[in-house]
Length: 164
Image 1: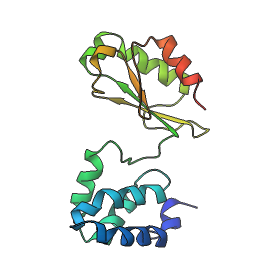
Image 2: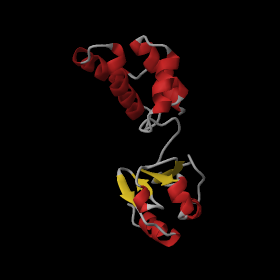
Image 3: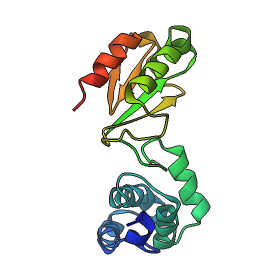
């Protein structure tokens, strides 16, 4: 069954209930937006398709463009399916000068998927990331909330092989 068929035109009942329970704790609808998006993302299987963004906008009576702007601003919201392990490979100047592109290619080869795709087993997905804020560890990647620095392509693959 497709995501849109599963969810219809709006938020699932459980998601609406969870948002309604949070309303008294937030002074404005805008303040409730981030938690509402987290709830919607959980109910849409870890990502926010356009239907989810529209549904949150309707539920909170906000402009869809405002909700979309928040979704695209924060890295913690996903507009496409992601794996259990979300991998970010830094491609900023420090990492690029020290081999970041090689790390990116090693990750792509090992996982056998392109950026923003999920491995067949649902374990991993990866993206290049403009800056992870750890230039002293270049080249580096982040898996979940854990930094892995001073990488070589071989070390990056070893780390990936160690994921559950």
